[in-house]
Length: 410
Image (cartoon, rainbow, N blue to C red):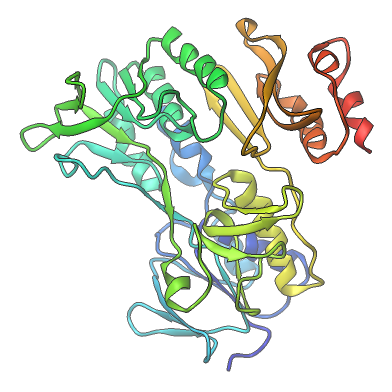
């Protein structure tokens, strides 16, 4: 069995990189090994669909830390390496090529992989996805003035790519299966506001549209929907979600369910194995349920919390979910992850581009979406976390500061 002072991290993405950094910052002096499949040092993903597509700079600005950081902090960063099996009895991780790495405690931060289209023509050239640095660098030169870009999927990634492509002068069409954009995270009223923004910038937004097939002579040229509508395409970007990379955990006998099941401390069904980031189906004490979050904050703060739990006194990770998205000149802040709500309350005038929409469950704020109101994210999170009651009138009254309303729950 490995020395108890060894910490191994499978996954060298955002969560894995921050976890290794957090262990050192917490004073852990033992060995840290990070195993990652990509050739790049750990990096953030939000710029991949925005700045890295619209600019001409290299990927180094996405890096969490410069490459020399890992050697300087005695972090054994093994890139271009794929973990293939966890030997729980022997406390070892087997790596492709025959290497084995012993662990005292193990963190699985394997993230997710993109969903691919299953229709005819999905293997044509000219079809892109956005998940890695290399994906963005491959797509960027294709987003040119006048290029016909079809984005399949109207979630955050799809809409951010659409905005980036339109900013570069491309003709853009978004094809969304659901009856609204942002169907997974927003009420239809919010989805309509975002769709209207895109339409006002020249994006053709199609909702309730199913892709039947992609056509072209070796390279994609058309997207054909089941209703017969055909959209010409020089480039197709598929953004229909990700699948958690949970197979290595399942093969090791760990509990999985839409990700690797973990408690509020990040601990899995094996007390020496933890999970963090996009792959973790973790328990949120504030919401009182398990959920899997695909967000910058969860990869950042969640991974830091779990990493500290692996090397010091454990503390539950409890945070109100928070997401953001930048599209054109819109900064969208989404707070909470409500499963149900009975009504919406609007603060401000959405037509001005600055407003907050509250998701209400009785007198409780169970979620909120802020349009170009980034400074209100903190009080909104406090309101969702609180058990305080709020009236519709006071939430809509802009003369009442949100931070004062949020203090009611303190």
